[in-house]
Length: 592
Image (cartoon, rainbow, N blue to C red; front, top):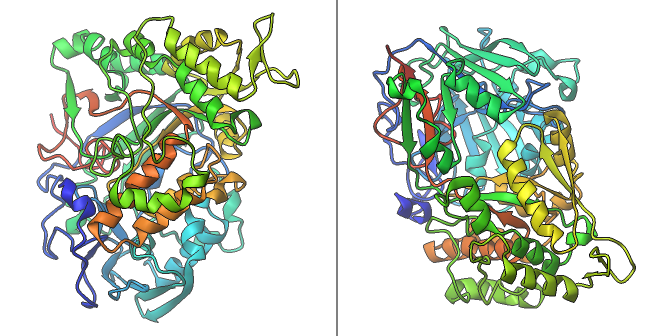
């Protein structure tokens, strides 16, 4: 399966309308497929799932910048023209659209709507709704939608149920990205401000509708028995539960106790030590709670604590490396997980797309060489995270951090406080979300380690709404960071690492990267014409990010760990992406 991530058997020519599209090659499933391979087409309908969520919410519209929204709504409560299979690196099959058509160079893409597609209020989905959705989301919606809209030269209706998008740049991925935008009902928003929609849920075509909610407390999604796509092969065996209820908790420890008490029906555990030692409560012993481990083949992504280079303190790579040296991962990992979890070593680590150790070679080196003068040490020479001896003192790490800080102009005075030549203290704030108990524990240990360098950071804990606002506007110095990536990196990488995010609020470039080489590598793999070039571009980008020292990486969540009520079942055949979007609750069912 991993070989599919870089398979470059491009679709041959302009073959007319098709049932699906793959980034490279052809879709794995034929037009008459029964169901997605990781769905059970015979799964019973009914029952419910009650899941706990950390934090709070004050909006039900995930398509605008304003407000804090339950993250699942974007995927469970809305549909797009095409739907993604999570058993292939990047392949889409018709959902609201019955077909997709694009020429060999993918300079345009055309979709034809299904005649039976309709909104939850029973009204049909029209080309007018589609075109309004794309223009609205692209101009006043969440920043994640803006990038595509700037690359659309024209959008035109080409038939009673057909719409064509023509692009103004060469980018093979755009044909797929265009098929993934949520479709909303134009009539709902006529004469109203979409950007201020807040707690009014947009009318959608999804199998689920928002039936009840209380801001900050819970959201209940109910399965629509009259859902238009019940007989669609893409939907067969999915959306089996009658109710998906999300209960919100301000504290992770309280949420775990609620699960143990039976108030919740499922719980994801990210700490391997806790999984091994604290899941022996009575319900597990009685068989009422099942412990399931879900493997995956996706890249590790990045999890850790990001440094915001918009703050001049973190603008120097030597300072960022010093922060990494001082973070005694081996000691923290032993304390937190009993040493049971490995450390993330790169953004695309654990997959065929991850950077290699040692100096850059071959095509990777060729791509990076024109930028050599502007790259920090380690990009071309090879970069690896420091490894401590596991003791609490971490003498070597502190020694290296001290040297790096001195080289960058920071020294500790007689009072032990770190200052620069101008007498300014090395002062920064670590932003945390209230209730993130494990992050708080790690940061508490880290603060003690920084104290040995003469640094005493301020820890600021804020609620969910404040945290989202601060992150959106990059109002932090250091913060918890989680970025998942796929086996088919594409245009979204500009949102993660692109220079536009330095000043434009709401992107995912939290570190403030402004590296021409990074954008060049994204361009390189977006327009690659060979397997080697695609891999090389991603591997080169991986090197730039890691040697940029923007994030202090922590544990790798190499498998999914889900404890759940025995009545909740899932298919034996697992998707390539494992416990990811499209898995729970999408293909789960309830059975006594």
